[in-house]
Length: 261
Image 1 (cartoon, rainbow, N blue to C red):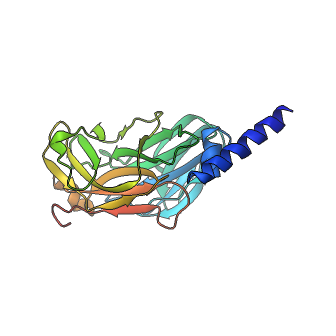
Image 2 (image 1 turned 30 degrees about the vertical axis):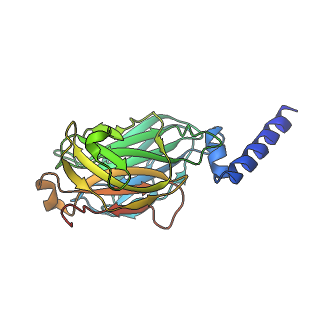
Image 3 (image 1 turned 135 degrees about the horizontal axis):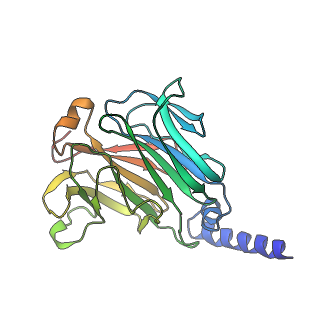
């Protein structure tokens, strides 16, 4: 009987969510029923093509700089992650999630390090309301050539001196909201993305306008504009969007309209 009631609740929630523009996959995540999923972001300008390893085996392969993979299912429990030069299993950097849980989204990011490559890890509990069709957004700083960043995701023409940052104080190799916290929620619409040094209102980056769709699931990662040499030029940034879900364009690169680069 309990199983029947649970299934009835799921069917009802899925029907309501579909009518509101959401999807049944969101229902399963919100209720903690779907398998945990994971994806990988390559954010090392001078890094080699890599394979993404989960528990010692290649889950996704041949990932280049600014490459983003689609989500893939993984098992629950303690999970080791790493990345290695393609065709090898010798980790360039590694880490672990202590207790991978159903309904969560996990991100592994290859980031520059001194003197060796490093790794960034994000556990997103996906605490989206069942009836919500809001977009989910999180920021990550992978720019070795920038200080701590404030990010403004605002309507075109917004005077940022009159508003607070959407995501404040992103330090190198860290996320806002932090790992373990839910993403922030925004209405779908037309936006620009602006970056400043933390605490400043002076723009160091501004994207062109773009559409953030309802139910979008974005990780916005700051990266140097181009290859290894751009790491030496302060504040020359692009924003790399890692889109959640299974999409033909898991990576979207937002160029800098201030410099034209």
